[in-house]
Length: 254
Image (cartoon, rainbow, N blue to C red):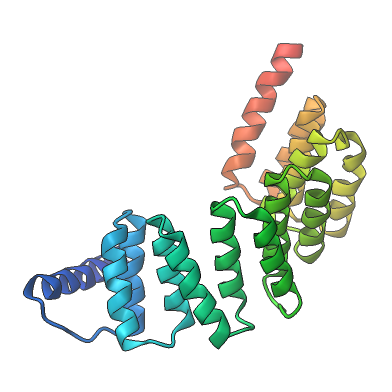
């Protein structure tokens, strides 16, 4: 508690110093960690124009930081300046052609623009060299296919994501949704149970088994699955919430 309080005080002091410099139109040196703290503060409070001012100053001091470039693109995206954000990321990609974060940022913005096929192409390019974040890349490909209402392709992408990371909650959840859409939910039970056999202590796997059972109106099995998830992670808020809903459903059919 005391640590969090000191951290918040330090953050507020950094923001105060930064804004004081802006008012006085004076410059002061901040290291990159300080800039990131200031920018995060503005992003968390949805002050995107101030975040843009901060990231521009940071890039004046650290012009080759790909992390700052990606953050600026995110801010521009929040301001719906999509083309400018993409131009910035394309320049960064030419300098750092194997930086996965840049590809993820480009793909995300293309998806926001509704250019799902283009975003899939970008994500697939990233897969050719990415050693890390492969689960996240497959997940984003799945989301793009889902937006195109190509649910079979989305299912395959989510499965590939889960093969990399059995606990990827987004992929587990969206997979259940897509299987439901195409009428394959009943047959997917064995698929989810396979992951539980491989990792019986995965709260996410039990949780998503509960979601599938609930969708199939197998409420008692759903409650049992949620209970296992909570036995593994007692602070799993979504499992508590869903289990409550399942008890309500069970009472309605009783």
